Structure formats: C-alpha cells, structure tokens
Amino acid sequence: MAFRVKSMEKWLMMALLIFGGLLMMVPFIWMIGSSFKPENEFTVIPPALFPQHPTLDNYRDLFTKMDFLVYLKNTLIIVVFSFVGMFLNAMAGYAFAKFEFPGKNKFFFLILATMMIPGQVTMIPTYLIINKLGLVNTMAGIVLPGLVGAFGIFLFRQFMSTIPYDLLEAARLDGAGELRIFFQLMVPVVKPVFAVQGILAFIGAWNSFLWPLIIANDEKLYTLSVGLSLLKGQYGTEYGLQMAGAAFMVVPIIIIFIFFQKHIIEGYTISGMK
Amino acid sequence: MLKQWNKHKMPYLFIAPAVILLTLFSIVPIFIALVISFTDMDLVGLADYSNIGGVGFANYVDIFKDPVFLKSMYNTVIYVVIGVPMVVVASMGVALLLNYGTGWLFKSFRVIYYMPSITNIVAVAVVWGYLYNGSYGLFNHMLSWFGLPAQQWLQDPSLAKFSLILMAFWKAIGLNMIIFLAALQGIPRTYYEAAEIDGATGWKKLRYITVPLLGFATFFVTITTLIGWIQFFEEPLVMTKGGPLNATMSMALFIYNNGFQLSKFGYAASGSFVLFVIIIIATVIQFAVKKKEVEY
Image (cartoon, rainbow over all chains, first blue to last red; front, side, top):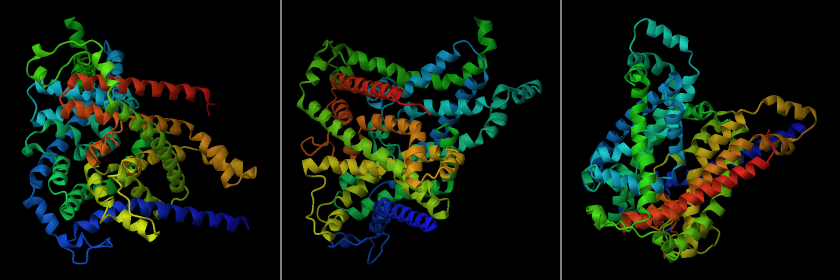
C-alpha cells in the first residue's frame, strides 16, 4: 500500500515536471519552427508550430537585409573584453585574499558597496562621464563601465582565501615574480571559479543590450541584441526574419549552456548559496 | 610613504584596475546623480556646463506632481505585488520537483527550466511579441481551443501589464530555481530519515523540514526578486515602451525615458533617487521581518 502511494506520487511529480517544462519550451519551439517558415505561412489561421515548406531564406536575409555579420563581430569583441574583465576581477580578488596592505578593508568595502547601487541611478551620470571622456559611440565606451564587477571579485576572493599560503611562499622563495605566481599558480588552482565566471561573462556579454544601445549611435558598433531590436522596429511585420534573428542569438547560448551547465549549477554551490 | 608603497606595490597594482573602474562608474556617478538632481541639466547643459542652473528641490516636488511618474509608481506596485510571490513560489515549486529524482529526466528538465533566464531580452521580446500577436499569435489560438475570445495582449491597457508579468515570470524562474536547488541539496538526508522513523509522510516532511530549512534561500530569493521587480525595466522597454497610455510604464523606464529620450538629465536623476530610497526602504523592511523569524 505504502509502496503504491509512493509510486503514484512519483508519477504525479514527473507529470507535473514534464507539463511545466513543455510550457516553458513553447516560446523556443515557436521561435525555431517559425524561423524556417516562408513569409506566406505567417498569415495562415490557425497558426502551425512547424513550417509546411521549410526555408533558410530568413537566415540568409539576416546577412543581406541586415548587417548581422557586423553585429556578430561587435558582440564577439565585447565577449573578449568581458574575459579581460574577468581576469581583472580575479587579480583584485587575489590581492584581497592573499595580501595584507594598508586600507585593504576600506577598499573591499568600497567594492562591495557598489553592489547595492541600482543601475538606474548610475545610468545617467555614467553616460555623462563617458560623454566627458569623449567615448560616446566608441567600443571603449560600451565596454568600460561593465568591465569589472563586485560580485566576481567577491567570488574570486572567497575561493582564493581557501588556498594555503605555503604554496605561494614556496613559489616566492624560488624567485617567481608576483605576476607569474598569479598566472601560473593561482589561475590553474581556481579553475572551477574561472569556468563559472567565464560562462557567466560570456552569457552576459553576448546578451548585453542596454549599454550598447545607449552608447552606440553608429550601426557599425551595434551588437546582436541592438541589431535585433532595430530589426524589430524596421521589419515589424516580417516575422520570419525576426524569428531567425532571435534564433541566431538564442541558439548558440543554449548550446554553450548545455555543454557547461554542470559548472554553472555547481557555481552556485561554490558561492556559498546553501 | 615611498617605503610603504614599495612594500605593498603588488597588491595595489592588482586591485588598481578594479578599484579605479568601479569608483569611476559606480561611486562617482552616485554623487553626480545627487548633484544634478538639484539642477535643470538637459541637452543644452550637456553641451556647455555653464548653462546648468540649480533649482533646489523643484525636481523632487515636480516629480510627485507628474501624472506619468505617479502612474509609473502605481504600475510598479502592481508588478511587485503580483510578480514577486509568483516567482518565489513557482521557483521553489520547480526546485522541489527537480529535486525529487536524480534520473536523466530530472537533469534534462533542469536545463529546460533554466533556459529562459539565459535568453536575451530582445530575442524574448521578439518571440513573445509574436506569441501575443492579436491575429496570428499562438496564445490567441490556444485560447480558441477552450472557446475563449481572442485578446489584445499588448494593446489592451488593463491586460498589457499582466502580459509583461507573465513574460518576466517565465524568464525569472530559472535562476531562482537554481538557488533553491542548491539549498535543497544542502539539506542532510538524515533529517528525512529521522522523520520517516517517526512516521512522517511526504507532505509533513515538506511542511516541517524542507520549507523551514529553505529559510535562508527563500529570504535571499525574495529580497533579490523584490529589488529586481522594483527596477522592472527591460520588459516594458523592449515590448511596449511603456504604452498603451503609460499602462506598462515602470519607474525605471520613466527614468530612462526622461534621461535618454527627453534628455531631462536633472529630472531623471531625481527620479532615480526616489527609486533608490524605495529600494532601501523595501530592503530594510525585509531584513526587519527576517529578524523576527526563527533561525534554523
């Protein structure tokens, strides 16, 4: 009897899980299916999930009607800079974890305090600063404000604090320079944090929208998401093109996520979120 | 002084890039925002700072007389009151379901539930805009299966808010569910075994062990979700631009519009401080409520 209740419960749980999951999937299925539809299938009632005559025209149009190749290039540049930023976070985290220096706690508090400031407050002044520096409509203006982040620094510091000093002292006695110790000793040891931070940095940079939208006036600097919002405005009724653009943004990130998802989920355990 | 510098040169060099960038783009801006919120800074002022004049508290007085700002405050309250409980309960529920088993099915669905939260907001807007389409959208078609009339999801002022909430809800579950999942996996099995010996059933175990032990995770998710929804911004920006008739205008979008569309930098900055104060108050209340609860 007890066994039967238990197994009923399990079936119910699985049914709920699958039902909810399918609902979550609807927008993705709709996007992928529609991105292969030719233009005349969009006004068919009732709407079908999948195309009757699949076509790649929508994807081709992304590169002929729009400059998606340029947007892709810009997005990848931002991704590369986000990795640079990650190393800057790691260096700062390393200094806070493994060095004693005057003002250490004050600096660390300053960094943590930035986590509490809402983006809407800093948005306008940051734009004014970028403007004053003459960086409006430049890649530097897009990248610099978000290059480093308090949360990343905090995470690196937490993890690096657990590494014994002996290891560092031994390297110093061997005459290794501090930079070399950082890159050749610390970086390999904290690889799991780099894995998590690297994926999160990639996702963040790939999806970056608001700051490029504010800073880039020139289409040459548009990222994929800004380009996609332009597409939404310009080709408001061409759903095939829109769906292809959305799929072009979403599918790569999902593939990367599926490959690395184990690290991301572990990452939340590392960050002490218990 | 020089001796100190030489001794501690390396750590200072290590933290320098991060400290400089965060100071320049997070700490300094907050002071600039405070100062310009008492001025009439606009595009003319941006071109030549000598055109900026102090206006005292006028921006702060005017903003509370601005019907659009008041409307945006009301909308933000609706977003928070409906959105936050929905997200917290659903992400905890999904985490419990996912934690129920360990097979491939559970692992795959973990990915599926997480996917929306890594999906770009513009892509989400594009796809959901089409799902919500009045004539050719999937949602109206699904309603017709149940004999329900077609809806103008984004054009109807009273429905548009809820359409945005539904979309944001879909996107918010994944990240919070992972936080609950990490917390669930930290609960020792022995607690459940002890309860089973005492004859506790599934529901009782959930009620008296799991949910109380999720206390900290629930607190964390609630507070981050609350702060996030007070700043509700990207969804109305990309879906409706605050329309129809400002029905979806949030406070954050109001600030953005005044700053970057209307170039009223001073006025927008004062709005951003009102928002900041509201966030601080909400956070303090959360911590006060938390303090009253029992710690496990």
